[in-house]
Length: 509
Image (cartoon, rainbow, N blue to C red; front, side, top):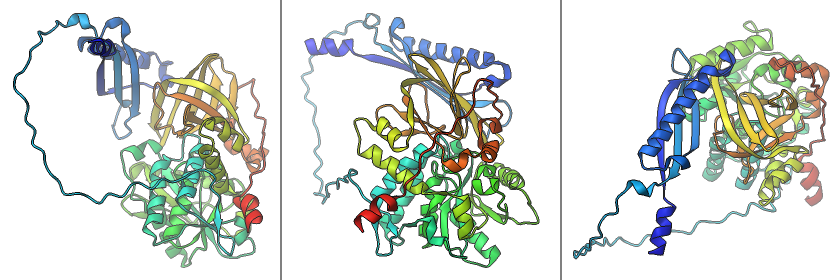
């Protein structure tokens, strides 16, 4: 009887809403219409919860998910999902008379043949060290993929695409055993005239939750560029190490039986092709190829584009036409250009971040910050508002985090750009890396997965040194994204990035 009473006292009742409505961006009218519509929906779900039997004074909003629907024409269509929870109001229910049933239920027991089920194999993610072959080539295994995938999520700064599917593609390649994943340092190509290329996805990250990729877009784009140039490339690397794109170099290189290069084009994730260091430093923007989810490709040749902005504009328009997502292969470069215009040891950096996370389960957030030579900007925060809108093939918006000291606002355009207080004080900005992680697990949260009510921490990692040069900041600094803060000036704080060869190869081989 006591147990029944306690169980009844702990009963909760919920109310849910799932609908499509217009949510006008805050930038239009300061958020007046948006707030009014959300307040109306919150009241509606609370009334539904009360109608379902909850005590009115105990009802709280537990979930608020706002999903922009870019494929709806006109207005600012969002799919809005709300859940309210309250304690069961027992006074609304009359106690039913207890009835004893004399009938005993009969159960048919189905005898199934015994199955030979193997127990799951436990993988130890701690104390992992890279494995090298006799030539010093880094041989990737599934635990390496777990490390790199986690680090790519951190370096994605909320963008670059959700890393989970790319991780599964990598693990599937390794499990099939037809191809190997091998990584070499950029110095491997230093004295070579062979050409290498960078790959990645371009478009709106939120679309990946509704439009599944084939996984072959980037490889098909590489094939198209090889055919156009009548040559074979000698190596592949990721255009950006952040997010899902951080693993695309490994995936494409393995499928083509090439080496993946421990480098990337920007040291993190950024929204535009024009943010790639090679383009900022004056490398040619063509030829380059794009492939959509149906395998259809287009080629941008030198007679079509002469500047990186022209390439960005053409590819961005094609992305919009082709479902807001496509794989790209950027112009080939030689070993000397790779040394000058890429960010070396990006895959290693991601690996070390993953190593810190998996070897420090109790203080993972602090461990990851230390591994990235960064800081924990917010250790204990709660997401109280998320606003997303899709325009020009970008997902733009902001997330509001409730802290003890006040509210922190993080603005994003695919990637997190600025972390500021409500009074306008800027605490961090690009090109430094701003990443939201789950408070307990330190798992990175992308701009398409963050939700109302999440308990989060905010990490700020320093940008690589090459990104802090004055002429580079003109393209990727805070002013390049249209922000003007009179009381803020970006001050770089960087640390050297080690490779796995620096730490493990010379020591053990």
